[in-house]
Structures are given as C-alpha cells and as structure tokens.
Length: 115
Image 1 (tube, rainbow, N blue to C red):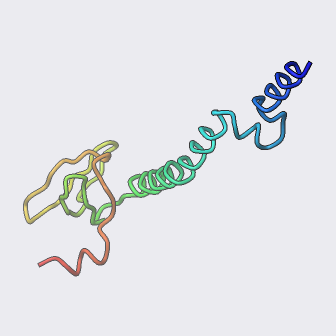
Image 2: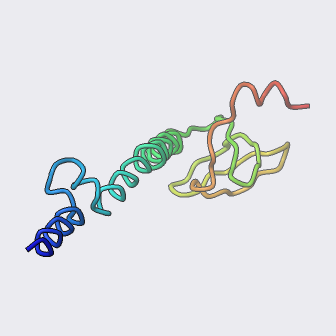
C-alpha cells in the first residue's frame, strides 16, 4: 500500500501546473508572440512612418527644391516628369534621376557645410 501512495505522490510532483498565468507562459507560443510584438513596435512602425514621410516628400517635389539622392548626389530639381526628375548638379550639368532614387530634401545644415 505504501508503494502506491509513493507512486501517486511522484505523479503529483511531476505534473505541470494546472492553470493560471504560469501555465500560459509555459507554452512556447506566448514568448514568440511577445517578441514579435516588441519587434513590430520598435522596428517596423518607425520604418513605415519614415517611408510614408519620404513618399509624401517625393510626391510634393517641385522645381527648385534641393534634394539628395541615394547615391549621394546633391542637386536642384530642374524639371519633373511622372517617374523621373531632371536634377541640376552643376552649371550646364543635368542628370535624369528616378524619383525612387531621391533620399530626401537637402537640409539647411547641409547647405552651410558646402565649400
């Protein structure tokens, strides 16, 4: 009889918790979902906001705006076409650049640092 009592005690000690917050956190899916939530808030939301801001800037470009491209070229917009801008980089030097290559508007701080 004492053997069966010891056996039942060992089963009770080895069983997982029967509910509550500990049981929910013990499943492997909850930490994964929490990690995805943190990554979404920390990485994806700010990146989407930056992309929306850049897209608005590109959509609102006008002749005379000073921009910088992804390749590092600084210039002034001489003409705008639906998918291409004509970028004036020096006197008598104009380049056709895709609108998608515009990294942003040139900041005032950049103008002061030019030689």
